[in-house]
Length: 385
Ligand SMILES: *Cc1c(COP(=O)(O)O)cnc(C)c1O
Image (cartoon, rainbow, N blue to C red; front, side):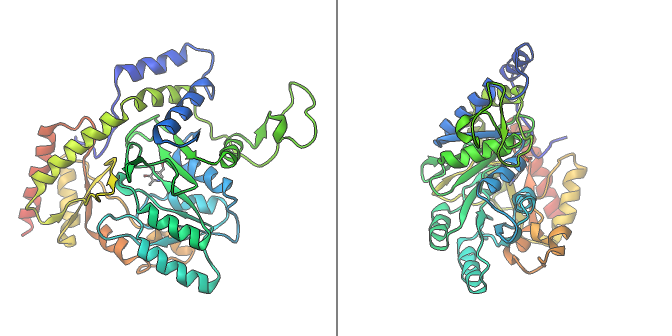
């Protein structure tokens, strides 16, 4: 079996986790703080807030930006459900922006056109969530210009993109956004088993996210109403959740972060190999934009003949190659259709979805396995002629 993605675990990762098990703290403690600092420093942001998943990270990011009922959150249709659901957790309405047919990221012209319409209708978004699909940054300069013009906030969903760069700086530095969110799920670049993290340059947003992560509870006198009643005292000053990361997870993440550049470099070597081996087959390979260094979370190809996708997908699975599809456009999900989305809303995302297959791509994928993937795909494509 060749999965489409999987974690890479070394002895140092195991030792780091075992060491925590023998220590005084099992959940949020010094290693979580160290992990937050490590990621924030790596991406050149000033604050990091670690939580138990990127889904939680997206939720507390929306909370910190005061998203609520009556507000709109927009995201790309070509994404995982969580990029949209965070808006619904806050009671906001959600709408979808179509994608660029080359990068499959949120299209800035489509966003601009939608904003013109929304302004006329008095329904401008409060928050826009661009998603760095497959690890390649969106056109953040274009999105930031629109944010300044129309007054919306930006959360980058960088779940695919730790280790990526945009205009020669790390994704996550928040030069063009308010908050960036990372995921450390095992199929992503770096893992904590489950885990997520928000970066920002805004101390006020970081403080709100810290409160939202842990019950809205504080022991800091400067955040309290009235006086502290003593050294035991805490206050709940807002509504929050238990979204804490454990020390075990933070220790794993800290050790993994030492290797993030090597992890991404290996993905690039494999992707370049795919590019060469797949040349000449009736499919479109992923496009790499010159202003971005992708983290290459995924290697999605788009078949020239989308009518072959079902058969090719099944054939690959039958050969033990666990290809996948990223993504079913979120605006086509029954839940969002009940809220008003419909087929035709995002034609580029729908056209891309019809023909796409994600090929296996992960650190431990071997060259021989990769040759096997390409041979199986080539055979299936030629059998369909
Ligand atoms: C994986 C993923 C998420 C959710 O991450 P979790 O850590 O599993 O909650 C959100 N957005 C995108 C684009 C993802 O790929």
